Length: 113
Image (cartoon, rainbow, N blue to C red; front, side):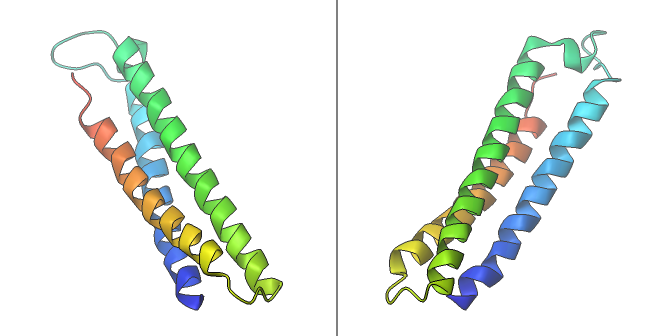
């Protein structure tokens, strides 16, 4: 079970990177347009929808990993004889979290101009 707690750092790093990308994009979208349009990015419906989707993806991944790690931690503290289900969910949540963080960054990078 100790390795699960070590891998949670990967989830934290991925969340931090995705959060930084999202926050940076939102800041940039408030002041920049593109070469194809003079409309500031934040005023475009496609950008608004994608930022909302990215925020939801990131928050859901974060909630899942916090919940799963919390349950695994509780199982360890309660000395559950076989915490295999909790450990499996924690590992799944960590993996899912890293994939979803990458999805957030990709979503922001692939927005049409």
